[in-house]
Image (cartoon, rainbow, N blue to C red; front, side, top):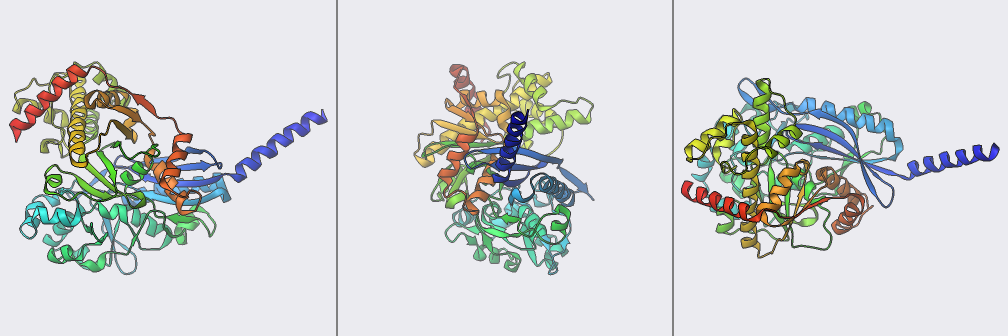
Length: 515
């Protein structure tokens, strides 16, 4: 009896000792539909992700303009961090924050938030590309920043502020991107992380600093931009009101990570000792590209719509922004508003039951770029291009997913042309990896082996960058080896190649006829 009791006590002590030895890193990941806090438990050899909390996100309409509920997001973050503190206590090491790109908030000299951050799809940037091109040519802009000119980029949002004679801009002491703003509220430190800054079309590719020449030409005040920090740099420690809300000690660190969610997602790819692969971060946006050491700034690169965003470990994320699952999300939102409620698994199942290649769409056509009745936009596009209009929800969703996969093929071929790489393996990471039908379509359309996962690649990349900053890991390659050892991705192989080749010919013909 005593022997059994001591064995139990020994087992409990071992379990407690194991928990004490674990180090826990917290990833705050803000997406276009939701935010979350995840814990990365590291036992010295393996990393395990544990969800802490999730909270909703989405645009809110204020007086006819689209904004983000930034205070609601911050409340959800603090609740998650407090739950993690309660669970893990002194095992907590640090926090890293990532989000979508380009959007920002203004602070005054005292650190008060001015206004509510705009949503990047707000219509105030309509016509701003042509306004800027009256001052600086598109090619000059691309050669300087390396960033594709898209209507929602921070640069065009700031030009819109100028054109509106914005009182917010006039009174701004600092501009902070969304993760930088959260970091400021946590630590009191005003810093801008370089990967998220690179999304805004405001940095010079050669100097990797604010492009003051460009900003001066456009009359954008340079004094509002804070000093840049790199992934792995320590921003500060949780302090003030945040510390009281979380109930943490004095030494909970906040690291700069790949604050742009795609930078963290690409860091979370489980590839080791290889440079010849393509990646696809699959979510509301699909971002497809390769890792490079130097930017590609040619006129052809600009014409094809590639962008050179900065990544972890001094890399360049040479990629193209693709509309992504936005079209499916908008179909779901429209049907939900009319009483037809579906989750994403149901939508994927519906697409599986739809007829293949009833119609072909270019997911990057401007008709699909804005919110609204997306099923009707798909029908209008089919009518405009002389194709069969979908007659069921099954066909509508299938057309959207097939269009995405065909776009992947187009972008992959252009990546091969621009980089000279073979790119026979495609790594898909992010929330879209849960869509097995789309993963298989991607393999079929591109004729590539597809390796899908991890689903939470953004949080994984966030956490391993904190670990590098803390000296736990010493290189990106070592970090990716840890990911490979800890998580199990799923492989897909090309099928039905003849039908997909015929579909791609139809897609190319459609594109050519519309140009």
